[in-house]
Image (cartoon, rainbow, N blue to C red; front, side):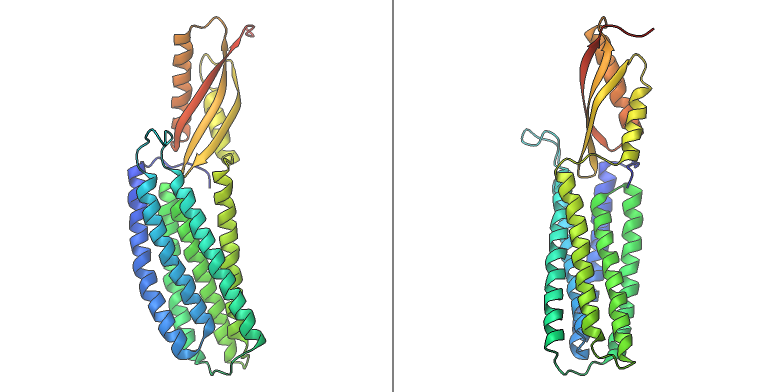
Amino acid sequence: MPIKSEVTAKDRRHAANKTSYVSILVNCLLSIVQIVFGLLTHSYSLVADAIHTLSDLVSDFVVLVANRFSHQKADAGHPHGHFRFETIAVLVIAVLLLIVGSQIIITSVGRLQDPEELEINASMAFVIALIAIFAKEFLFRYMSKVAKRVDSTIIMANALHARSDAISSVVVAVGLAAHFFGLNYADLVASLIVGAMIAYMGAKMGWNALMDLADRSIDKETLDKISNAIRDTPGLVDFHDLKTRKAGDFVLVELHLDLPANMTIGEGHDISDEVEARIKSAVPLVSYVLTHFDPIHEVAQ
């Protein structure tokens, strides 16, 4: 999403902690209910959904730990700060989703090939699935709203995890409802679909996290904001080699400034400071700007 927030790092840290605590409470209660009733009703899709909910609990704790370390001040060993702990946390969540999703797929396929004759209490399991849908959708809407307000990638990753849970619960509910029409394999098919959805979400999140760790440039809209801010700087002839990369939710910028060759170092430094100020004003999440001067001997009048 385009970077636009003007909130402070303290606001972002507080928001991540608060959303994680709310998510932990909801997921803890929900997973207990899903496991108990999944076993009582013999619904494997409900148990699979409970495992997905438990993976949310792990991701919540990952967010809390990453949030603590990522906002530590820069030091000699980490001169650009510790912001990439957030990206690493997103990658951990993604790997967790891939593992959980793959395991559910493998188990579901095995049960479809060699099904056990267990009578499913579809009515009771269906009610629990509906409760799970509303609980998870509440978490998604709550966390995504906070994530957009504070421009937090890690909170949004956790929100998307909750949304995948909500969608998987819808699949479970549909599968259980199919039992009312005599489709006895629907529960296992639903669990297979849930596993595939979880694995896909993990793969998508993991790829984006890896690209950020590999210094992928920021989105075009935000890059255009930075370019426009630089271009309007008085005294600047031109600029080139603009490079950006992300460190957690923050942005690092490097560029070359074209300045008149007869300009003093002091004047060039003032323009460099002005460029940095304009960039950070346009995109407040920019935490670092590195400039290099290139002398231009013939400046168009």
